[in-house]
Length: 184
Image (tube, rainbow, N blue to C red; front, side, top):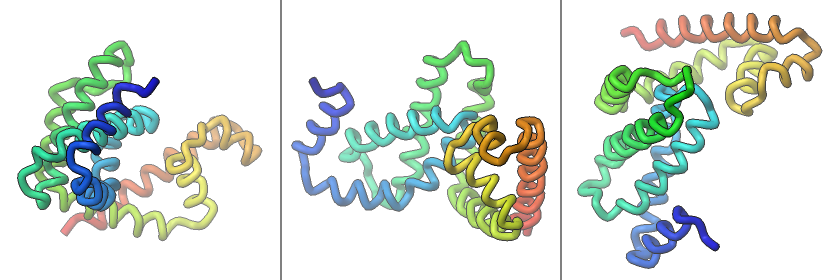
């Protein structure tokens, strides 16, 4: 039996099949920006993945309501913000969740300046390139590949505390580098 999400997607596809390629093109063009936006609002990669999936379904089912394709990313930010708030309500007992007012403020600030997100992404890529290979691999394993610190420690034959310290130092180094790179 198909899930409710799958039924929504199939129903939407049957309504206007010509929209599929336009939607996919816009969605793929802005996927990284939207995911970066969600990373700013949610503390956990799994939460980001879940909200990203929910957001993409809502965007697809409501794609016909988009007035101008040029406004896709701002529209996607609004949808994502509501999906984050809904997700937060479902996970309200999790102590790592941001205050809703702060979350709305952050979301509004990011969605009002999409070029800022691109500047930060560009700066972060440049800063990652400046790291020595070993440090870059560690950061990528921890944040891109979703490995837990305990897994990294075991794989690298180091203590969990040393991995936490190293990641903390690298995050601070990257934050300084990004800050310096984005100051004009």
